[in-house]
Length: 219
Image 1 (cartoon, rainbow, N blue to C red):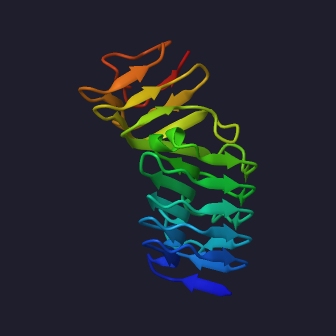
Image 2 (tube, rainbow, N blue to C red):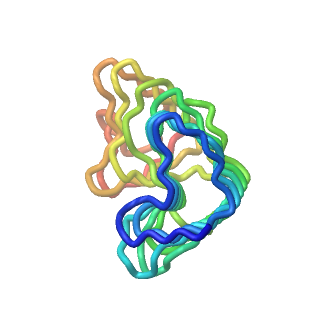
């Protein structure tokens, strides 16, 4: 199938508890290529997703939200070099695992290869075997509501903060050696009352907040 979306909508929107197999499609979008919502799942494989050329930034190739648990494998996401878009967004709740394997993701400039929430690191998600354009950022931000250890994902150890990382009451975030957070704007690492942050900070941390525009290493 060939699907073209000219508006800020989804090429394929999977919701509720649907578990479809989506395979072999060519999707061109000005919004979302594939969007998984609620407690949906299934498998997306062998699809090619691209963005309408020069139609505006802020688009998403594959977006996974809430309690959705799809298997995303062997898809190709193409780049619009004139705009800044996100190839894959994993914005799931605590305790939810996704599988993202063997995809080929192209990007450039201000694109994000992957946008993660800290919950991704605590749920047993499998993100491996994917090919990403070198130098394209991986984004990280959101609220952690369980226990998670930041680590290498698909060989990536540097993450760009695109919103604050908030460690909620009762949650524990561990930042081991070798992880690098690139701060920007006013985004920070925030620990709420009752939250726990584990790690030895090499530089620049005061009151468990990351100052804007700073880069920090953890050891």
